Image (tube, rainbow, N blue to C red; front, side, top):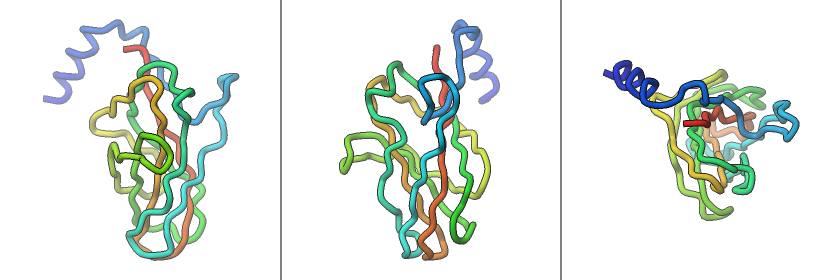
Length: 142
């Protein structure tokens, strides 16, 4: 069923306008350093929200289609990443995803309007303070 919907979507839009990108990214088109997000030192407790991109950096509507995790510090363990939006201190979760090292494609995209601040936070099963680097994979041009 999903494949049929994907084909219909592709047929209804100008697929040549679709562009993949990442957040964060540098102005010159070269990918910027990933953002490090912390886990709390208590098992299954999220660390603080960390800004991925400011609202001014989201100039057109985006769809988050995946994310990458790398450079774990501490114990590489079962964990969860939460992606959110909103002003600092008032973030609302858009999705929560199980994670280990690697790249993840989401089962369905998360729509992000222009001028939306994006942030992420992280938690693990170990209860050890840990950090991981995250980048969001986004799609534009639809």
